[in-house]
Image (tube, rainbow, N blue to C red; front, side):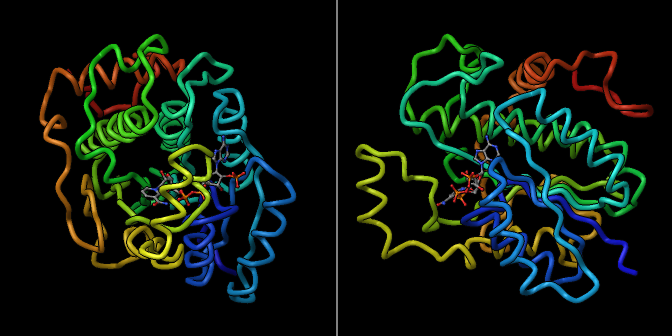
Length: 292
Ligand SMILES: NC(=O)c1ccc[n+]([C@@H]2O[C@H](COP(=O)([O-])OP(=O)(O)OC[C@H]3O[C@@H](n4cnc5c(N)ncnc54)[C@H](OP(=O)(O)O)[C@@H]3O)[C@@H](O)[C@H]2O)c1
């Protein structure tokens, strides 16, 4: 009986589908998180075609733009799949026009930053029970030159589509690194990856962005190639105990210099907790020390 369980978000298309295929092929029971039941069913069929006879693909339906839905998802995973030792936060979006989630949070920030943070946070007690557990966040090189001010974490800031996407990915890098600092790497590691420029659905949002995407498509990676670094970060034995890294093409890559700003790191951490409806008293169990 195979006891390895992995959770992959956004596994219905693009990079996430290929990550889930690769993880299942290495023998993990794979829990795919999706917002659409029919897409999830098709993804499961495809993933099961490569998985070994003794692994299973499970579907969990959740809207990662909703904090309630993420909380419910985490509760189900904890009760049904307590052996989970790998979490790949892959789901992501770009929105062309400013939109708020039902929790009143700018949509890029809600899906690309808060969702992976809250899901990780809720699953952390479970992950810590499996020494060597890993969290891999699919980030983006859009974070590398992004600007982020305190006000950008509020829903009132002016909107620029790629700017907001980059900010959400930079906010996610901040909390990925902070978790890596707080949690002993022998328990859980936290790393982020840039998949490259990959031909997926993410840019199919209409307008100029979609047109540019069509023109660039011949130069883009296939989703399978785009999944390679995330898969490697998820499963490579040589990365056991390695935490707080950002990888591209299986190599450590340059992060945004703003990540060195301790004050901004503290602000992002505290605002993230607030937006995710977590309070300081629910912070990581002993012996962790929160930032600042
Ligand atoms: N493609 C690139 O060039 C590129 C470059 C850098 C980073 N990335 C990152 O790679 C990751 C995967 O993106 P992709 O390029 O593979 O895009 P994609 O094909 O659009 O896949 C995105 C996945 O996220 C899911 N998703 C989006 N919003 C969701 C929500 N509210 N609740 C649940 N699931 C949701 C989508 O579900 P549906 O199928 O239902 O839409 C889909 O499964 C993202 O984090 C993205 O930022 C991509």
